[in-house]
Image 1 (cartoon, rainbow, N blue to C red):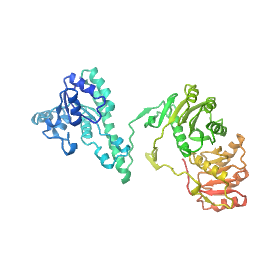
Image 2 (spheres, rainbow, N blue to C red; image 1 turned 180 degrees about the vertical axis):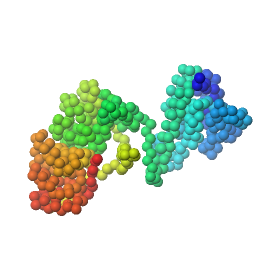
Image 3 (cartoon, rainbow, N blue to C red; image 1 turned 90 degrees about the vertical axis):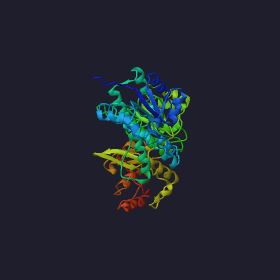
Length: 510
């Protein structure tokens, strides 16, 4: 059985005319009867091609300032009729309804209008009614009608009608229907989320139409996909395709470095979503070298990120390290040439865009959604709980360590000195274990902890951590506070001339 259908009539009503002219000319060449409305009708007329105004079918003009043009039984009857249904065919003839074999629509740009900061009045006017209805109708009746629902599909549709002289297979009509419902569902999601930003209805809707299949997921036996607009956030200069794990590490790197935006040159090296080295210095090269010193073993195969342009001197240092990804706001010409010396090394320029304000993850048979942890601990929010107050350099290190701690897996302890990460204890089930891990690691890389500071992502339920830290030479501590036994830790610090400050904010990262 031949399921192909030749297009003999088409309704065209689009917002974007880019790429439309070749389609119109090809349909005209194939003797397709074309119907249209408003600006699209004028566009087709200006091409010197005959077009029938929809008003000539409906006997109604475009009304309400263009809000109602195609919403009419003669239009939707032409789209929704079942051509193998005798009753439908009879009614078509009775009411003089023309058959419509193709519907080409491009919706009002609702999302772009919202993103532009337009007024509510302008945004509401960009909620397409007729277009979305045409899409749903034509996609539903894909057995008889092909629906082209976006400017993104113009080129593919042109290829189809050119290759087959206007004959469209059932398989292709159904595939375009799937594309159409993808467009309509994404459009409705964007509109709902716009309204729900104020109403806060207990509903979760997310829609990403840009996506790519990755080589695999966390492991080779798992499928992996990324849905989002990577190119909106980064310019990729060089290297292989990013993997699932690369993307997770890049996300962690970007979120960490956002804490140091606008500050002195800061360089971080991440592995498995955690910083294994980070330092802030007068130059990017110094920051890189001292970040690398934090854990040169873990840095192998890591993700590197800078908050300042990477210059030639820094690139020469980085080039000797095997690393997966390098991220920076810019690179000097010489630095880019040097770093491109490794074929697979991925180089990214990070653009300035607003990141989502919520985080989402699957959980059980649903999802967990929460506000991002957007609190950065600053000097003005600290409570100085001990008799001994931190010196100005200790205070700088405490805040530096706190920023790192916020972006390290819980339970975590971070040790820092001179705006350099000495070591972290990451992802431990006990805070004491996290501290001991950090101390042992720092000593293994020959860090002198005398005068170092300690940050904790949550309170100390007992004074054992401050005692262990004191014995290692640590002189100042930053923590949220809030334990019913806070006073025990305060008392120990007072007795041993340690400084401790409370932030009042826990920074768990599970």
